[in-house]
Image (cartoon, rainbow, N blue to C red; front, side):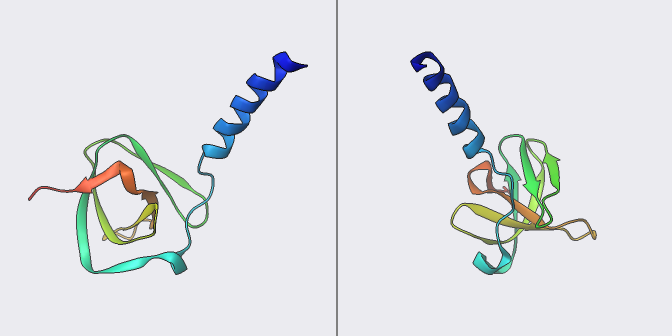
Length: 94
């Protein structure tokens, strides 16, 4: 019984750590203007519908605002908007 407790706990912690839903637009603090950020690692944009869009390292993203843990990313080419982990992006250099 105890042998199963540790692996089960590790799996549970891993699954709870996965982000399976998007943040809420109501929680976003919007910037005065859209700013360009760059992905520093391979990451994923999660839309409000739950769709996941892969983003490779170095991709530039248009950020319109932030929540406490996520950035709200918008597109200027009619692509889906969504949230990306705040720690996965940095301001882009001009």
